Image (cartoon, rainbow, N blue to C red; front, side, top):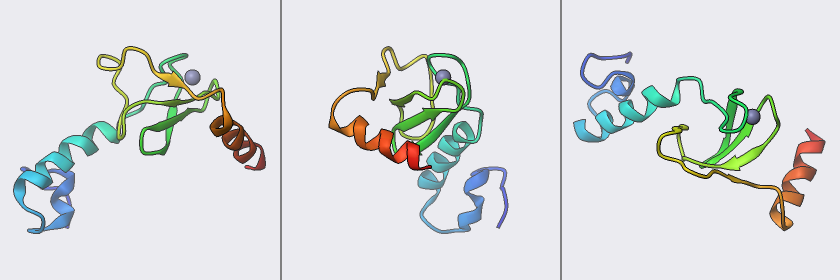
Length: 96
Ligand SMILES: [Zn+2]
């Protein structure tokens, strides 16, 4: 199953999951497949996990939207740079 006119990329699901769910999926995936820009340097941000992003240019790891980045909505993205959580993330980063 490929792209369809109505549900676009969600056409791969065929007739399953209902039309409204497939339409929502297509709307998210359309934004998700675009280039995601870092809030700090406009570099390319890559999604690490749900809501966690990492910039390829400045190396910052920050919390933002779950599926795609939109500057209009987010006012102050939180940089993960202090506390125990970031220490474990830094260790993970150095091993990579
Ligand atoms: Zn950046």
